[in-house]
Image (cartoon, helix red, strand yellow):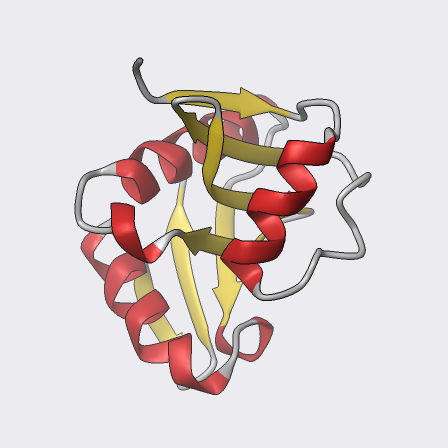
Length: 125
């Protein structure tokens, strides 16, 4: 099986189980548009949502980190942002648990985002 990125997939029971494991809870906005979900072997292993010009709910299962899944997922979301006419995308540290902020920041910086201040990263499209 190969890695697949789904753009706004229908919510399934398996997705709810997998994302519940990923986030430690089921995101309340799962029905909102612009979810990007990565699957491998029919399991949901990573997700993020484009909320206006913000990347939110970025998460990759710990077992699959450092394999390019998050990078591929982010690339798809940034492609969609360009299609929507956005000129930049940002992420806020306050959208993530304190214990994950440094890891999220390091990942975003490695993907070309720039630090704006202690709470924000941005990338020009």
